[in-house]
Image (tube, rainbow, N blue to C red; front, side):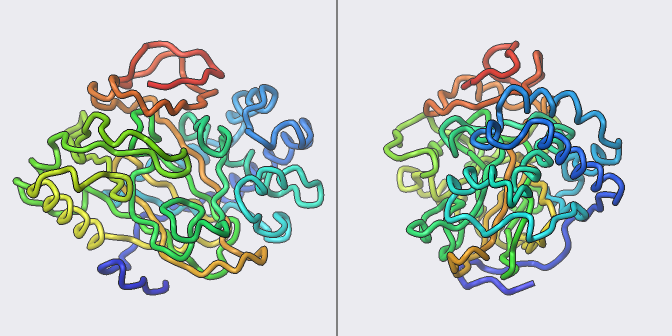
Length: 371
């Protein structure tokens, strides 16, 4: 595992949880994904992955997979809040060159010469459906249910998945939104330079009672990141950084790059700085290999990425990401009043009823929603 640049305090190399997808289960996932692709063809499904025929196949046929698949993709079981799942078979040749940006990745998924990208998209939806309810964002990657994470020229230094030469700061995925994922699924297609993903859990940090008290007080808002656009109102309702969930365990919403900390008082800023240092102290840094899946508990752990030099020659790092909602989890009732900055979720697998403390009690399958 490579060392991290001095922008981060230190990386601890102790292991996070590792699981193995049994060979028969891994083969079944890829075979079912290939069968669905062949049945439906390529073109109609690549842009958003929420074509009705594809959704119907995912919903009906995920149950065909062995029970060991559902066991493998269950939420992380340790305080680290992250799990590396190994064993999904991938072949570098099936994907073609790393695309220049996410739009190109979506377009190239229909390339019959390289069917692997679309088949892996379908495989990820099957895995995500076994874990919970996969969803997308209407304002991010055109509402695509599986996002492509590739370096993009001109975006090297921004705080987004398209960056490369800067440290992608640890953050809660979509921390600004009440409908953010409970679970993230990141699969590696290609990572020739062993670029590490960083993961840090609030349940491994040590903070004083005063710091915890300050960070549990709603003080400043969290704004959407640049993948959703710009010009969002920095004077939105303040949010707590830390709180206890319904089981009494620590939970967080954290995104320093999009939090107007200069608007907070001295005590809050100092507590936030100490939290940042603690998250760096307990950081894990798995460098995913092709076919490895990182499961991140987005209510517990923050994630980021170390800097690297993108070549833009078709060989760069390429990950895919799915946001997953776990309907059994309950969020703070106060979150039901958040406006989400007008950002809508695309939630085709949403259950008709749920336990979450969000506005409304019923949702229709295939709906586009916001809190």
